[in-house]
Length: 240
Image: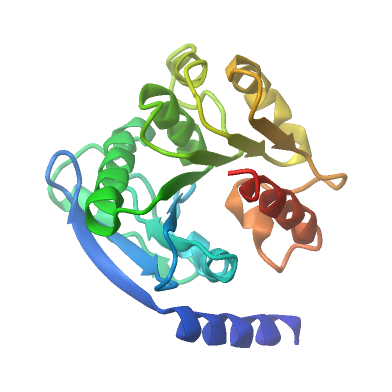
């Protein structure tokens, strides 16, 4: 019954705010697919990146809730992924068809392209980037490598996933904007060094009292502890 109610609320919310699927080029010309959730009267934009093996479908439930908080959103299919919630990753499929590499690190250019696209197309006052699992590490790298490009970062279960020592940590040391990091309880060891490297002042972290969940799915209604994550996320967003 709870799942039926959640689905009905989700459909109603999407109909209020609007959702459309778009395409734009990555840095190497690969066509990226994304879903835009538009509030129509917001000057703030959150760009959402999914976890390993998944797609923009990770945010079917999350993006409309962010709309209700006053944020336009774009959920992006990176070239490293698969499918989730019945949504296939079109960017990954096209990358494979064109013989392009689809490892985690190859998706960094997709994050760069997504930020550029949002800036040029919507020109929002604020851009916040949000990642899940491997992409949560890449958004930290992006913010460190481009310290003036965005106004905030949310990172759900980051880590040094790329086989290069300090690949994320070195970039994180240059971050100048507010950062929020969270994960499941047993994943803190994966990101504690990255968090320590981020300059003091505007960084926040959150761990649930329960065991929690990996990546942005921690916010899905199906998990009994999702409310605790949402409270932390909303509190952080208010600081940006």
